[in-house]
Length: 173
Image (cartoon, rainbow, N blue to C red; front, side, top):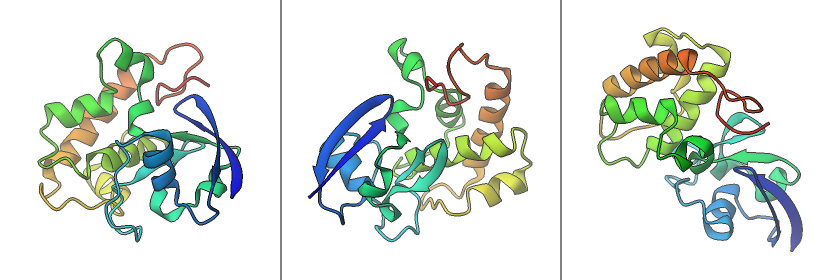
């Protein structure tokens, strides 16, 4: 067993883990962040996408021990202050308003990848959105509404004031 300390959605966790434990399993089974879903366990689908130190990673492709000393943001922690008020993160709201989901299985990973995409390109074209989401698969929607949601989310995020002490994700710095 290896002792790790990871900050997940702004809360520090210290746990003993098997060195081969995947980050996705640590987040779900130890920390209780079940919004991060296991899709394929082979890094093909992107359903398990989280942010590690502010950048998207497929958590089925990262060992929990690799996250030791780092910050992880899950779909549950994307907009903690907004969620306390019953509000969604602008990207979550856009996915809801644009009907960018059917079964919803891929949605957490899609949203996390979309937010990361907008860090580097806050006003992407449709082609850039499709390229930016390339590693995240949806088996239901055909992507049209997902692309619309990312465009709407980008517009909302660029016009949403960022609270003092928080980054564009809404997470306290």
